[in-house]
Length: 105
Image (cartoon, rainbow, N blue to C red; front, side):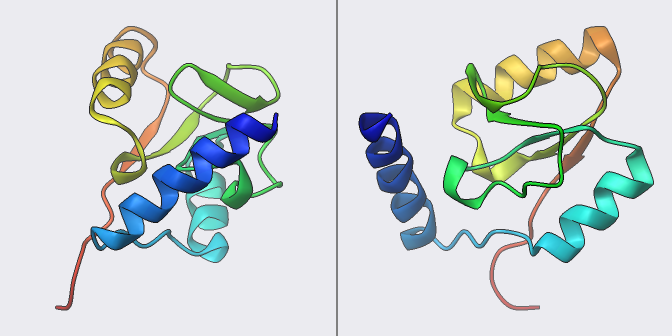
């Protein structure tokens, strides 16, 4: 578990250095309610909101079961995870893909 947290921390720091900022929990809660979502695909276990029944990123499940409507924060996924998620979503048609705008304006 420590190795997972270290790797998650490293990836989060790299994303933030590149300009990525996580959506607020308020925004994530609204997306959850609008889409009746039970799962979130997000950048790291440390920043995953606990009000989802399930959370993970790509092949890594942080908690819960991988089922139900999912809110996906696109920028938080690695390129391979983006491809996997789009393939899965096209089959199941469950989800809300969120693109976080970078920078000002």
